[in-house]
Amino acid sequence: MKKTRLYVPEKGRTSIETLTQLERLNWIDPDIADRIKNILVQDKKRIKSEAKIGNFSKLEDFYIDPDMAPYLHLQPDVLREGYPPRITFNMLESKTSADTPLLIKGCSHYDAPQKLRGHEADIVICGWDELYASLISNLEDRAQHIGKWSAFNYYLQKYTQEGDSVKVKNYKATDITIAGSAGLDDYVGHFFIFPENKKRDLLDEKRNITLESIDTIYIDPKFAALYKAILAKHDYTLYDEPHVLFPYGKELEFVGVEDVEDAVIDENGVGIEIVQTGSTLKDKNLAIASYPILQSETIIATTNLDEYGNAILNSLNPLRYDASDRKNSFNKWCDKLSGNVGENWLNYPGKENMFLSKKDLVTWWLSYSGKK
Image 1 (tube, rainbow, N blue to C red):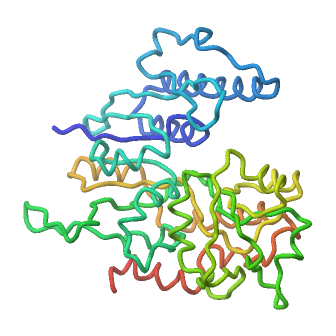
Image 2: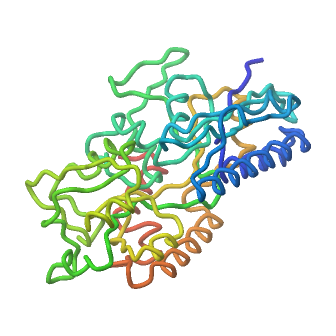
């Protein structure tokens, strides 16, 4: 029987909650799961406390209990210069209640889509934004700014199945599909952000936000290709009403920085930042604009699965975009975000439009009906 390869987040809250879910399914021994989660939690606390004083542990200071060594490893922090390695979840082998062999492997959100594309993984639990960035070249050209995962499967260039053979539709083809939300309630938005005192400079006479006076946008460099694809048409406006206007015929320069918020404050400029609760924006007097150009959460994605892989996928219970539990938690996220940001959320579209705008409703219906 083929072993199904499940890749899960290797660290952070998503890792803890995913491991808890797998423990409930009896795919991980409760004692092992609790010990792994405790080590990950303590390691995160260590990083935070050491960052405050600017004195990090050295490599030789790390110790992992030999009993836990098969399940954990040290992972370099390649995104933050000067930071020490993190202790992350590595892997374990298991079986489901149906005696199906299962490999559970820890992986970063950024690398997980690559594992899926390279057929090293059968199922991945990762961020929608990371998957989107990985597969932007596989989307139809007219759909490289869909923003939400609800329409992703509809627009993705796919393999076509013919009996036991696979006929490649075109050079962009992929067999990856989003099964649904992982149900971790970890929503974020990629928003335009800018200092509060810059709001007047960016509003036109109709109170739309215009970037006509902006030459540079500060970003996380790993999303550079994705942002450029989403904002490729300078006359493109977000959703059904303008809200954010892009300068027609003007090339915007995307500058990758280590900390977008600090760059925006230092340069009194505009950036695109991943926003979860808005509490940091509130503390730093930063504002956000209208709809996010991209909304994200942890999703479950797959390649073509056999019957055993499909049974594992069904046990993970991926949620449809419009699942009632998901909509309720999404609305709570919007309420918390708008409560924290307050008047510094310019042209707040409302949580119903944040969930699905009129344009989203069309693509969402198409994605689930399979019609074009």
